Image (cartoon, rainbow, N blue to C red; front, side, top):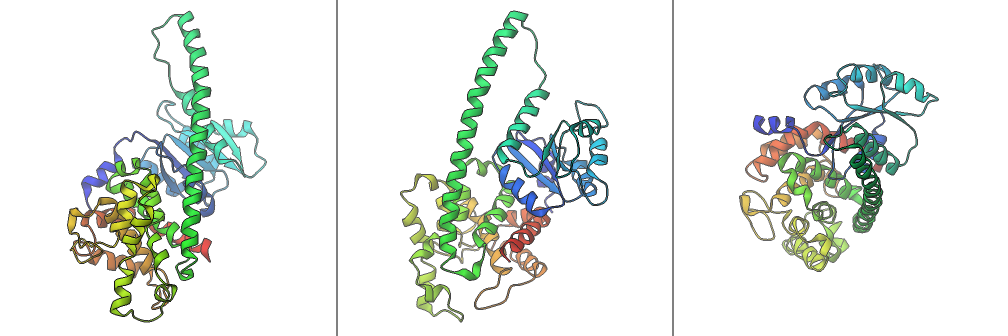
Length: 369
C-alpha cells in the first residue's frame, strides 16, 4: 500500500467531513447522492462499532446518526461522540423513524433531529445552519458595527441560500438528463444492468484518492456516465453477439470512443476531463489499448482512473459470452494488471478503497436485481 497516500487521507480537508452511520444501505446510498457536492467529504458506516474505527483517524465535522442501530444504539453512541470538549466534538444530527422527542435527542448530545423520510434539501439546509451556528465571531467591532454587519450578513445569507438552492437544482437537472441518456444507451444492451451508475460511483471513489482536484471539473462525472455513448452508432447484433467477434466487428467496436467524442464535441457541459474519458477510457498503461494507442501518463488521468472502474464492472457482471467473476477473482485480476493494463497509482487507490467499492457493487447490484 502507498503509505504516503494513506497519510494524505488523514490530513485536514477544505471540504466539510460528514460521517453517515446507518444500517440501511439504501439510505446510505441516498445520502451519498445527496451530499455529493464538492463542499462535502463523506465516509459511512453501518454500525456504531464500525463508525468508532472510522472516527479514530478520520475526524468528522458532522455525524448523521441513525437511532436504531445493531449493537451499540444511536443514542448511546451520540453520548459517546459528544462527551468531551465542545470545540472538538462533531455536530451530531440524529435520524429516526421512531417517536423519539427532541428533548431526548438534546439530552443525548445531538444538535438536531430529522424524522424519516426527510427532504434532501432540508438535510443540507440543516447542516449549513448548524455549521454557521457553530462558527465563533472574530470580535473587534463595536455594538453598532455588529448590528450593521448582522443585518448585512442576514441579507447576504438569504441571497446565498437562494443561489445555492438554484445551483443544486440545476446540477440535479443536469445529472438527471445525463442519467436518462445513459439509461437509454443501456437499453440497447440490457445485459449490462446498471453499468453506467456503478462505474460512475467506482470512478468517483477512486478519483477522491488519486487526485481530488479532478473533481473540480464538473464534466468529469458526466464523462463517467456517458463513456460509452458512442455505442449508439454500433449495430445491436454486434453489441449483443454471444460469441467471439470477427476482426471487422472488433474494429467496429473499437471505433465507439471516437464516435462518442464526435457526438459530444459540441456539448459544453462535457468539455474538459469528461470528453477525455469518453475518448480514452479503453487505452492501456502499456500502450496496447485503443483508439490512439497512448502509453502511460500520455493517457489523461481521468481516463486512467475510469479504465480500472470500467474493467472492474465488466469482470463482475454477466455478459452474453461469459459469466461474471466473483469479486475476489476480479480483485486478483486487477492486482495482476498493475503497470500493464492499469496505472499503478490507480491500482493503489483501488487497494485503499476496495472495501467501499465492494459496498457500492453490493448495493447497486441489489437495486438492479
